[in-house]
Length: 133
Image (cartoon, rainbow, N blue to C red; front, side, top):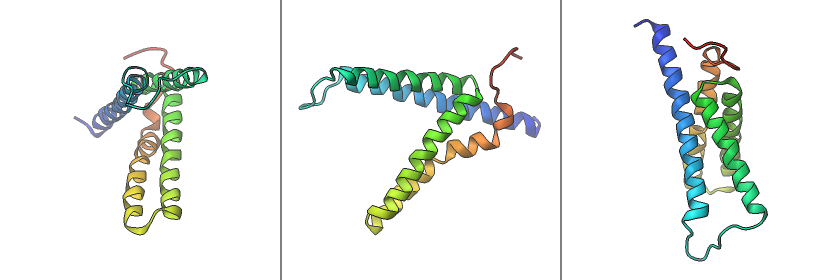
C-alpha cells in the first residue's frame, strides 16, 4: 500500500470515528434527558425541549456529515472542539489551583485533535460529492 492510500484510510477512519462518537453522544444526551431521570431532577418542560432537540438535531447532522467526509461538518466540529479546548485551558490557568490545572490543560489538549486532523486531511474532504468512487 502506498503512503497516499494509508493517509486516505486514516482520514476516513478519523472522521467516521468522530461522526460515530458524536451520534452516540447525541443519543446518550436524549436518553439521559428524556428516559433516565436522576433522583431530584424533574423532566424537562417548555423551552427546554426546543433547545435540547435543536442541539441534538444539529449534532446529529454534523455527525452524519463527518461520516460522509464533508468539509462543512469538519469545520463546525473543529470550531466547536477548539472552542471547548480554549475554554478548558484558559479557564483552568486562570481559576484552578496548580495540581489540578494540569489535568484540565491536558484534557483541553485532547479537544485540539479534531482541528489538527481537519487541517492535515483537508484536501481529502469534499463540500459535496457529485460521484462516488
